[in-house]
Every structure is written in structure tokens, then in C-alpha cells.
Image (tube, rainbow, N blue to C red; front, side, top):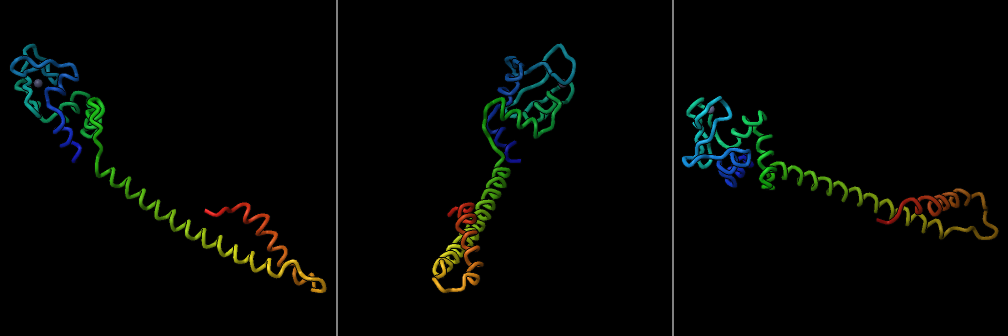
Length: 164
Ligand SMILES: [Zn+2]
């Protein structure tokens, strides 16, 4: 859980409790939000907390997760946002990036196939144009199929499919 460590590197326990409305006294104690008390017995350390009244303790992620009754990962997200840290989970980033690479490779393969088909259609049309239109005296029926194919290529296929 790399992002937890990064959050802890960027923040202090004191900043976290202050952000959520607690003001540590001169000895860095606050009133414990996890049990009822009149004198502050929750001690704020640099990166952690401990309550001498009820025994609650842990790091800043734990504090936020207990305070808002949310899970650790939600607490991390909340700290990330509330302090505008803009930290991202590198592992999540990597999988997003890998998907991007895969998608690009797929598009490249598809484009290659598309171009191959386009070029083969060009060759086909070129070959058809060479024999069309039939010269006088040729048997028109023989060329009917070729003419229909050329019409299809020129008036439909090349109109629908552009060179990419
Ligand atoms: Zn307590």
C-alpha cells in the first residue's frame, strides 16, 4: 500500500487532526473523539496517535477511518483529497498505462489490416479499369461482372472507406 506511506510522508498527525477540527494543547493532547472525556488524553505524535483513556491508537489513516467510520482505503482517498496531495496509486496507474499500450497495439494491428485491405482493393480496381470499358466488338456480358465490381468499389467501397 504505497499510497498510505506517501500520505504519511506528506502529512503530520497534527495537521490531520487540525484539518478535522481538533486543536492540540501545548503538550499535543486533544479530546479523544473515540470515548467520552473532559480532559484531553489523546496524544498526538508526529505520525501517529494514542489515547491513554481508551487505548485507541494508530496512524493518521487509522484516525481518519475511525473518525468517519470508513475503511482504510477510503480514509487514504479522503486525506489525499482534503489536503489536495494529488497522490496516485502507482500500481493503479501502471495498469491504466498497460491497458493504453495494449489498446494502441490493437489499433495498430487493425490499422495495418485495414490498409492492407484498402491497398488490395486499389489494386483490384486498377486491374478492372485496365479491362474496362470493353472495346467495341467485345462480348459485353463477359464484362458485366467486372463492371459491377468496379462500380461497387468506386461508388461504394472507396466512398465508405477512406485511406487512414
Ligand atoms: Zn480515547
